[in-house]
Amino acid sequence: MFLRHHLPGLGGLLVWEPCHVIWVVPVTELYKAQTALRLGKIWGLVTPRGIHVQLTDPEAISDVLARRMDFQRPSEPYKILEIFGPCISSATAENWARHRKAIAAPFNENIMSFVWSESVQQAQDLVSSWMKDGVHSCSKDVRTLSLNVLAATGFKKSFKFQHWKGEESHNDSDLSYRDALQIILDNAILLLILRPKLLSSTYLPKSWQRVGKAASAFQTYMQQMLKEEMDSFDQGKKGSGSLMTSLVRAGDEYSPSSVSGNTRTKGLSVDEMFGNIFVINFAGHDTTANTLAFGVLLLAAHPEVQAWVAEELKQHCNDTTPESWQYNELFPKLVRCRAVMYEILRLFPPILTLQKGTRSDPKTIRTSERTITIPPNVQVNCFVSTHYHPDYYPNPHRFEPSRWVDTNEQFIPPRKGAYLAWADGGPQVCPGLKFSQVEFVAVLACVLGGCRIEAVRLEGESDEGMRERVMEVVNDCDLTLLLRMKDAERVRLRVLRA
Ligand code: HEM
Image (cartoon, rainbow, N blue to C red; front, side, top):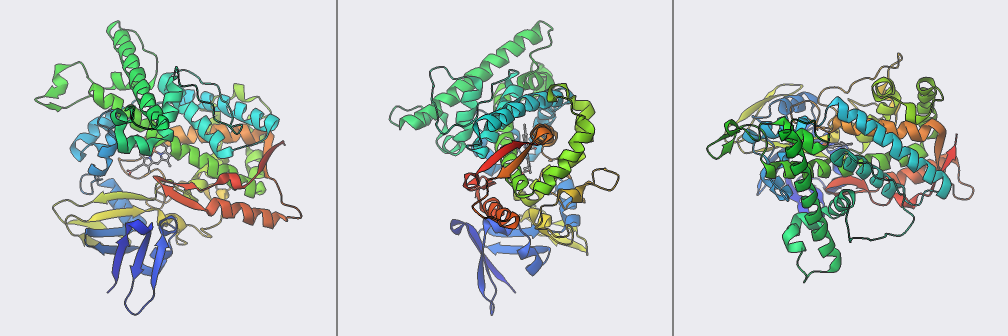
């Protein structure tokens, strides 16, 4: 029998086997399958606070993800996200479908086309600034790009890309929607803990008050957008096409039949719309920005992957300029670009575990070997350690995007339950899956369409030496809400015309 203790304060998992050594697995290593290889694809962690079952078995994971009501995602821990109102992440299992129906509305093909053209525009500006002024901070620049795409989609207005030049300029007198969003997302932890009202207090440091001010500006923007949408809705007009347009039109907000007693049965209340606009931005920003940052460094370390992607771009973009690229024609053809994203997220998924749990009844799960029974009130974690398991991915530690493409240049979809980057495989799949893919592919196509990313070599450094040095930086991660590189700027980069 194993006795295992979870010590959250240590940022790791202490696994203790009598007669064996005690070993501490850092959280950022925990997902890399060593524990599953050692203990098996399903193992349990028994703590004074409860029992946690860890799954690395794709059959078991698929079964759990498909049964949303049997294995419910805990909603309590996500209450903290309700800064502007209740949202999908904190909704109870019974309320979740209503939120999801409304939230799914903005993620339609019209918006994808907008995301594509906005990402192409932003990426072109990013590339020209990198060519002209050099790369000062790739992680900050891709963050700006991802924020601009999100803000443009939310507000239906483009924002000019400005690359990081080594200093931060603060002009907070008249915050734009984009700037307010940037301040609140950059300071999300502070905002989640102290809340906007407290942060507005004049007794707090100026930098904290700035976050409170941004939260209040963001709330005002949402109120204005709502008013405009309601006015155009009442006048039978189309609306601006922003996130708010879709949320307002997705449900029956105005209809009395959508509220029964104190319970809303359809659509979203005003607070819920605001809460969901925040959570869509919160969930969509760092996930995509971190993926882009990992991507830039991984590509710098793997010039052969850049050449492989460039081949595809040459074939399909045919020396045309990015402005002429049409989303519906080009996006489906850029299979290698999509494969690069899948491979980055296989190795560095931002969310390491999908938490589910049984309620007051025991539940059975079908695993690859047998059916097991999970007792009541047990947390069941679907673990991304499948991504590093050699049974599902040969040479799992290698960055090898070509594993996702067959000899006919068709995308090979991941095995069910073995790829969890977007929680794919059940109703709670990330609603931003396609949004993030469209953005990533557009950016990659713009960057590698005419340029190559290079890590500046140290004196006398070999190809292999450079790769090892860059990969050391890529693998040096921490977990601040999401998995991310600690310091991408340790690698100096340059962008050259191909
Ligand atoms: C590389 C990019 C992204 C990755 C890897 C990713 C991953 C995920 C994962 C794993 C979940 C499920 C979390 C859970 O159940 O605990 C999730 C949920 C969510 N994501 Fe994403 N995401 C990405 C981009 C986006 C984007 C661009 C948006 C919006 C613009 C977005 C919006 C959301 C929302 C609203 C949820 C909550 C859905 C729900 O509770 O049902 N995500 N995402």
